[in-house]
Image (cartoon, rainbow, N blue to C red):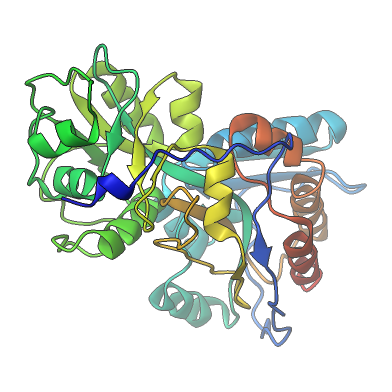
Length: 366
């Protein structure tokens, strides 16, 4: 078993009211995008001039609660701008983005080389992906009478690979002295759709679990468990199933009152999922030029180990100038004024220096 004798439960508590990604931003996005072919502007027609527009987006369920809050709040301040967002999963969101049926896509996984090549082949241009927020993927569970649960790496790796099947397995018992764990089967719940949350989760599992064989992707062949669609579906399945455990974005577990396990990080410390501990996963990391920062197994001893950025996918050129203006304005607002909503919902706001780099990239839109 992983050495829990050296592992103390360490929950990082920040004194400040909001927390930002602690990133070392040295990225300088290139400005050499070829836009000789105009990218689509989506299905919805513009509502007219004067800063009015109707925008449509689709993709990741991970940031959906925040996006819906942002877009509603922005509309209150800017009634002429209406933004609809479909929480269909990162896989479907990328597909709609590549097909040009939305004004923006959303994904919790950076675009792959294959997806970028498909975009270039269709639009003769490079796609743009900008991080909007960060968040943690938590192991939410349904165990009557178990208010706090600690899982070592051996524990959560074994649950995910199917090697640990009972809640009173000796390894889980050893990590939870004094806790009355039931003699019940573990009901693992995973995503059934193409999911950036799955990518973030399996990206960590691949790094942390020696016996994991399914790789890291938006869709994988699960060795065990039951599938559900979206973070919404996994949340509901865990709520309804005694003995269930599944991976969901922190905000979903928080909003629905689900219990969340504290898990062992790379340093051997058991860390509870909090926005503060999630932000430490990115502390000191350098963002690459395409903003595709990934930290599958953070080294920070106080970091929660499964955290990710989530990206908005944009076309380099929009046929409708009102849509382009509205889109750049709402993104800029979300990364500045919208930090309050991100913190309230349990997401990790983008820090100011990185937001400035994103603003520079948005200025390249045509």
